Amino acid sequence: MVSLLLRRFAVALPTLLLVSMLVFSLQKLLPGDPALALAGEERSPEVIEYLREHYRLNDPVPVQYAAWLGNLLQGDFGTSIRTRLPIGTMLIEKLPVTIELALLSMAVALLIGLPFGIIAALRPGSWLDYGASVFSLAGLSIPHFWLGIMLILLFSVHLGWLPAGGYVPFSENPLANLRGMAMPALVLGTGAAAVIMRHTRSAMLQALSQDFIRTARAKGVERRRIVLRHALPNALIPVVTLGTLQFGELLAGAVLTEQVFSIPGFGKMIVDGVFSRDYAVVQAVVLCTAAIFLLMSLAADLAYGLLNPRLRS
Image: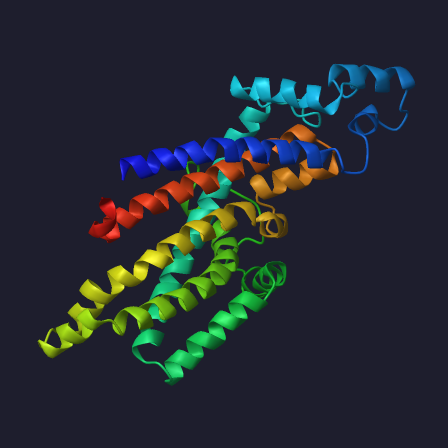
């Protein structure tokens, strides 16, 4: 297991380097000029030239990348050209918001997807199985932004139970924080729950058809024990892989949801960075998201050993 993790780390470093090169290069293909966006309406030539020199926009792209990567290795993500704040400080402020939203969404996905997938596998062809399939199809088909707007109309406008948007830190008011994050977590969680439910059902059906399950049934082992102690741990191995990928997608794919509910997380940060041509912010957010994806992959490798002792060696 230790050698496996070391190999994963050895692959992760070149992957992050490649991601940084791609992100930095693709940013240059975006239309618009950051210097013009910063110069204001008057756009004095002297001011534009000063901004180009100050932010090294006149340097060749490889020189810009080398300077940015050198600062990054020293822990300096640069300074936002829009807010004039250190990007590292902005990441520290925004990342916990997106992580909280992703964790709550994943909790919703697991609470819905796992039980429905297990029930559908235990009763294939029943109305419960068909109902779970309809739910999964709806969860995959309904756009997040449309579902978010519908939830706002129902729970905020008509019922008045939940706030329509905004964010309150958990440390300031836990109840207000959970009330504000309930609808965004439900919007993101339903889509992930549909995927988890389908994979859980498939994995459980495969596990229940194995020889050791038939042997346990022949010995008269209680059905609940067969499902929870024998079939479910084996079925969870592919679901763990899927869950880690889904968590990464929740971190990276909450852009529209954060915009709809006005949540100041990574999604809103990267949208503001793209519209203001704040390249350094976009690069930092994408690179952090890629690093989180790789960490979640490592977490999946550790979970494999916990769920299946044969994989520990």
